[in-house]
Amino acid sequence: MSESAVTLEEVLDRIGFIAKWEARGEAKGEARGEARGVAIGKEEGVAIGEARGKEEIARNMLNCGFSVEQIASLSGLDVEKINNLASP
Image (cartoon, rainbow, N blue to C red; front, side, top):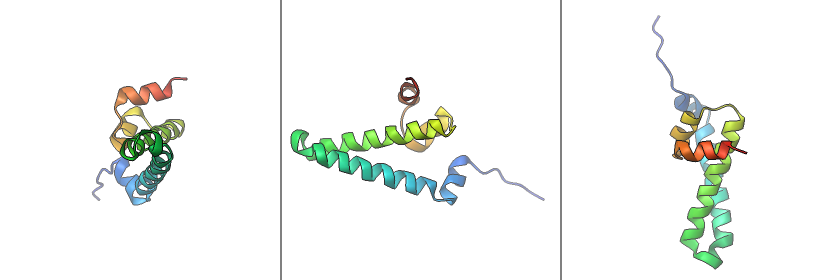
């Protein structure tokens, strides 16, 4: 009987977590970006909102016990940024 290794990303993809996570981050990012878009320009506002959405999700993943490396791999955030999010 042959067992093949399955990565965390594959497991999360199979249960739809990654798609939900990305959609939630994008939706929050767009909403925040659009709200601030009038003051700073729509494109810059969207980028800021998306970044904040990723940060919020990274914090939630830290609280759920994901490792910094896993979060970096799944979110695209760098390890230093994630470590800063973990600090109070």
